[in-house]
Amino acid sequence: MLVVPAELRAVAAAGRVASAVGMVVRDLRVAVRGPYAPGLDDREVARLLGLPLAGEVPVEPALLRPHPAPEPPGASGRGPLARFCTTFWEQALVEAGGTR
Image (cartoon, rainbow, N blue to C red; front, top):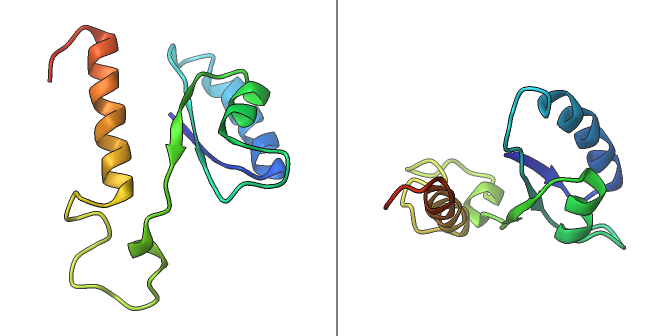
C-alpha cells in the first residue's frame, strides 16, 4: 500500500514511486491522507495514480500532540488509524480467500 498525502506534489512523487514499485508488487493500492488540496480527493488521487483506492487514512489526534504520551500513538488500538488498519486487513483477508 502506498500512503499519499492529498497534495499535488505528493501525488506527482507517488506516481514515480508507484511506477517503480509496480514492477515488483503485484497488488499495489493507494491510501490517501488529508487534508485535501483544492480539487483533490481520495478518488481523484487514486485515478491520477491509476491505482485502486484502499481508503482514506484518517487523522490520528495522538500524532498531533506536542508532548510525549505514556504510550505511543495507536497503542490502544481504538483510534481512527487503528480502525482504518483493522478494516483494511479484514478486507485484504476476504479478498485473499482467508478468514478472520
